[in-house]
Length: 405
Image (cartoon, rainbow, N blue to C red):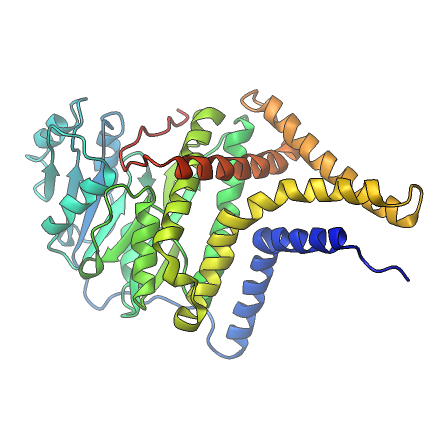
């Protein structure tokens, strides 16, 4: 009987970490949620508020004049009682007529407030400057280039009937066409899987990270965010969770967004998110302590930390280890055959990713390449994000990625 070599044991350990990060965690929390339901502590059902609470919809927008008319009408079309809704558009530094358009619309929309200025300070500073103006118990953030379903505000507000809920996030949905590039199709598939995990996270305890396109908080819980923060929505929601409140998820409240215009634009966005992930982990180190934060630490480490800081760097090591094992094994032996098949499987997977890269933006319908391509693409962006974070010079001001028309 032959025992596994140190290389084989390390390979199995790394493969197990990767499998747990991307698939295993989902199975585990699914099982935990099932057990919770059997124990009579199942689905957290939100009930309508006894009396509608006031809410301020905050829309940070920099040079978004192409989207502002539709966004303003979308806000006004919400089915939440209009007398309980305030609109606050923050268009600091815009040079495309955004401020002028909104000032003109104030005559028709009496509940509209516009914050503008000549200096571009960035989204985070815009939010920090806007929050002291909010007089309602709930502040709801939504991006200018997304459209909400008409029931979005009502469904998010219902979640605040639970006094333990400190923040609520809606669902981000990617609108793709059947002929969309592989990047857009992969992005949509990724967000559908993320939405599935968020449903389970919320039912188990709390989600770990809000969607910046649509999320709301109790105004009194807002803490000003550092000006160089890259992931403001993530930092705000995790700090609220760290104070003992739940961050709930309302999948029936959603923000529709087009995919990035090209893989180059999507790469720019993903690298920034990854750099922000490393920045956030440094600022949220206490959340790694399960003895203090319990379920929150388990979910945060499993769903975020491993995905950002561990799994992407295990992938190339897995190929190198596999190759080393094949070279060390006796040629023609069962051990050699097994590890050769494993190596071939990895080569085929990355080959499919390479084909997906070649076909991206070519209106292909060969969906078999979407998953390997987008998986490799996301993890490559994480590595580039680490380099960007390591080099420093991070700023809360950035050029937004162009979206498909």
